[in-house]
Amino acid sequence: DTGVSQDPRHKITKRGQNVTFRCDPISEHNRLYWYRQTLGQGPEFLTYFQNEAQLEKSRLLSDRFSAERPKGSFSTLEIQRTEQGDSAMYLCASSLGGRDSPLHFGNGTRLTVT
Amino acid sequence: GQSLEQPSEVTAVEGAIVQINCTYQTSGFYGLSWYQQHDGGAPTFLSYNALDGLEETGRFSSFLSRSDSYGYLLLQELQMKDSASYFCFLGQNFVFGPGTRLSVLP
Image (cartoon, rainbow over all chains, first blue to last red; front, side):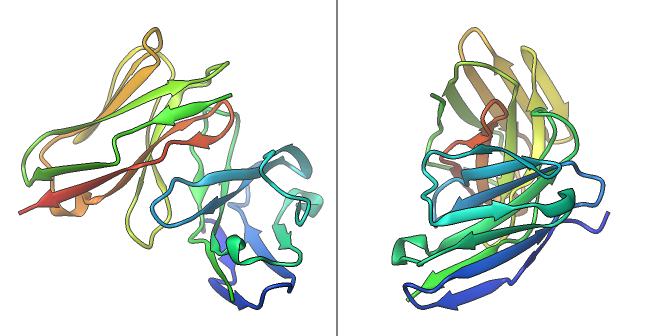
């Protein structure tokens, strides 16, 4: 168990640019989640995958956000035309099993949009 | 929809016992979990309750009452390292509560 890893740890970008983050889950975990967290708030659910299928996506997620999990392994989260309001910590988590299984989080990617 | 409510802050002294409450509203129920997050760190899983009653894991215990849509996390023999934010979590729709910031004073 090498844990969930996320890359990069930090990303600074200018408003209007596109950014892409990567998440490598724990290898045997079938579920992968993306969350966004701002200071002093709880993690906000964005989307989740079971294997390669994206099964749920938050209604709060604008069409500028897209996520993929090709082959059911690593996942990418892309934000197009970034806005200052996108500045946050983006957390990835993985789990093995159903909705009662613990989520294992990576250390996150901190995005700053200037 | 789903929603969870928690107190925003709790303060206690080393060695004391503290209870962090969580009330929730949900259309379905897959259990209530608790996570701990230190400043600058990732959330880590603490406990899970699917059925009514108390689950004990060392110094931490978690309680659930499904009829009251209520749960709590009980931390005993508080230590300075327990200073962190604590989140309740609904597995139904992967929703976290707003978090309770616990400060443990010497």
